[in-house]
Image 1: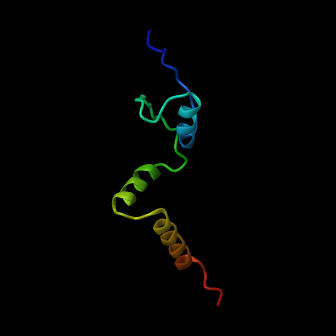
Image 2: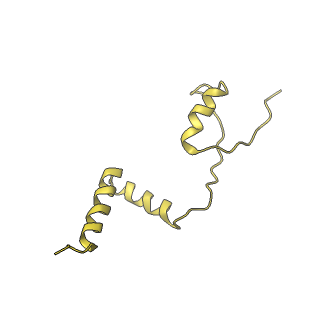
Image 3: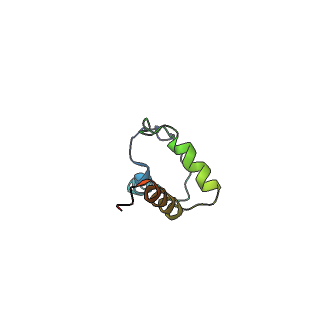
Length: 77
């Protein structure tokens, strides 16, 4: 008899650890349902996907944000 499906809620970064804890090998097939909580900033996920497709890294994004902040901050003169 196949195992009964189970629904759990964990952080995305904890998925691999949870599978290991349950004795599920990395080459076994599992079904993963992705149902993220409501986003704090609407459109952030879609925007990030576009940035990644454009070839930018997290470091690039951080640098661009800091550069934009410097451009709008008062110069202090």
